[in-house]
Length: 295
Image 1: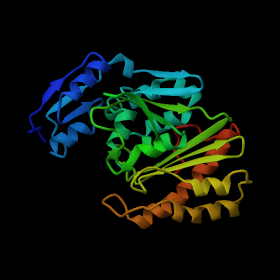
Image 2: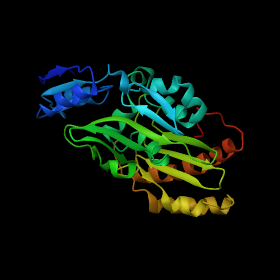
Image 3: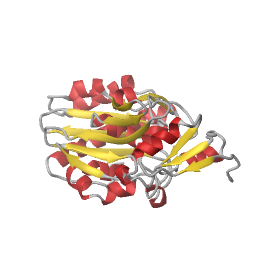
């Protein structure tokens, strides 16, 4: 499908210049990876009068680990995450997540920040940010501010980002306790399919868990009731069965072109049980290796 909507194009050389350009435009769109934006323009869902390309800003293209916190810049692609030594050593479950995003071509362009700014319910980055209590770092006309993941996602395709602002990075604090995680993603086929259900489980050696779901509610969610049930308990078959039933109180799947709500609910329970088992095994130094699907 051709792009029939006319718009101006700007490629600023600094974040400051980008903010100035945004302030002068009534309806600008920010281009980082562009995998969502280009499709939206083609389909006339988005009709910006100006596209501001921030891909070339070096300050946004960094992966850093400082003060026990991971910083992922707005220009960092999923392929960058896959190739990063920092990610593999400190946050291997992010490597696992990135490997499941669409195809190599999409991963070479798509960014974590672009993913959360698009804010579609089936995004892969949402459960990641929820589980790690991430913070979204923003620059705008009134200076810098930070937003928690809880406050960031407002509704499908809607975030708390305000006009004239740019997300510069996300920060993910490393849990104080040793931990391991498992990412479980269900699609209709292997390749560029969107998630029917996705789930991230972190198991910490202080006996606590962090559990987050995507594609089964209007926004990504932390499963606080599940965490409360599991925290500090011996993980037995009966406890897992009780937790699986509790999932029905945590998520609100819908029926759409990709799956029925009943199928999503059933598979969320299967994915939870297998993901929990894998996360605990990884915490104890056992298999499965990251990147090997448990479903």
